Length: 441
Image (cartoon, rainbow, N blue to C red; front, side):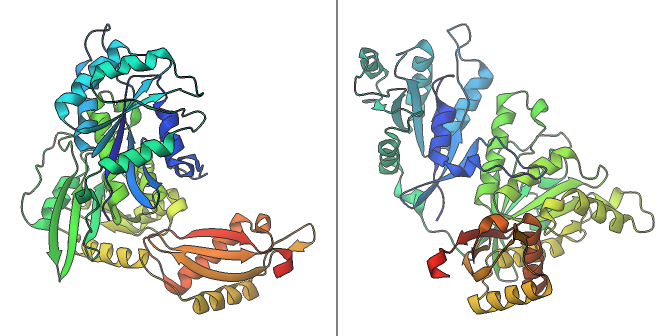
């Protein structure tokens, strides 16, 4: 199923971030101690009653000198509104109507989008008189919530799904492999798309940042359907100095959320940079298939083992996702691009691979015989049962006697054994550990 997009808009200090975090829940609160993983997502997958959607937090919109919304902030707000199926317009129910609220409402009316007016910070049964001022916006009756107390959020989400058009949930072609081309500006992403397609379907320029939006291009190779998603380059945060560029980052994140495989394109003349690590961390965190594509390899000065040495360096610096293959290409010369597409197909298949319960338990039993489980204070870890409970990415459940004894190094050992047996190149493998009660042991 495709995922509809829901945007949260409003002026600063109305509680948008709290509202956002309440809805996406643990997805955002997970802290992963690995390099390159973002901790402050502004777009995330969310779920309500079994239905998935993408939730976008746009940041505060405020007037300039209480009269005019600055051009950049207006552009950001309008981009959010344009991409959304439904917009949640959040206001401060305690403070009441402000000029900034009126300005945002004016933009919303011109967009003719489906809007839900939500008055936040109403945390008791006594409704302040100021709530009635919001009727002046002409956006209907304000729904009342308290983000900080998690009151009324379900009613808002029910209303969201009442307004989402049915076509937003149209079935997607499950055989279609979606490939997002991600990376910094000016590393050759659009050139790679053009080389894949054999024609200039995406504007290519030497000026960084030419591609503002993500652009979907379907094609077919050897009977397999693909969709290439060319994304705007993701800049360093310090260089995201206008909100149009900032929202291009959001669009790139949205492309990552809906792809099967992300091609992380880096400039071979520069090598792997800190910003590259942050970008690929987004795809890793989202559980996507990943291939690191070192582009512009035709103009890299070569010595003995240059390719091997760079691959070793990249693998070392991306140790938290050592599963990702590294490939070397030249979009300009058309070198090795066919192999990249073939590898993307293999990675997508690996991400959807299932291992039978019998095979998995046999493999883990052999692994334990070779390297016994850890112990703590005289208590040894016991693994009773293993099963794969999900795909995209593969999710494996372990039933154990005490999950606190499952040291991360032993979990990594087990993951390595699974990879030795079944590959899973290009995809992360997620583990969950569940304790069995003593009476069942």
